[in-house]
Image (tube, rainbow, N blue to C red; front, side, top):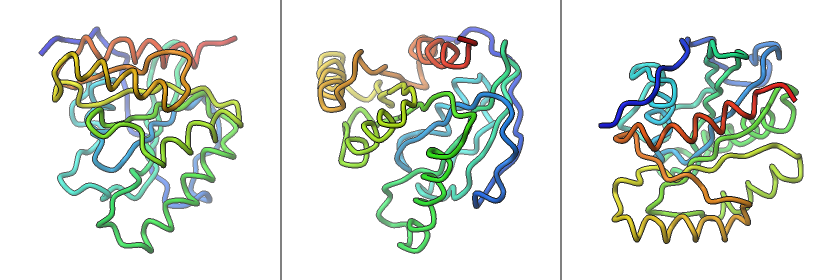
Length: 200
């Protein structure tokens, strides 16, 4: 595994199950969004260089909370892990409670500086992502798109999926192809996120 560059210290802040539990807005926030089985927790851990920070689960859809992490970068910011979506085996009532929670955060959070959208490279962009990207664009929320588990595909197939995702989502640049097994693929995503929290 290629090693990533040193990262600033990152610590867990709090969790919220409803908007009333959100911490007061303070630092810029970068939200991480993706399907329940996209490898979100593993990628968060890889981004900040701390294996046990975001809990990984063998049961997709288990995480029901929004989790805040404080990143001691320059400038400091919060990394916000949103509940995964789109897992069919999660009870309908639970899914229904997640949607307003996620929408409330994304549409009303005044300190939201950008969104990292994760898509499994083997599945590509589906209806949720095709709806979500324009929804963010309408609200002028910057977005970084990363295709996870890129090590699962051969290089030519991987590049084809990168092109397909860019076209399907009408992106202005190629999405990042990332693998937690290769730290060198994590670096460009980290740099793109840091740019979003830099003062204008």
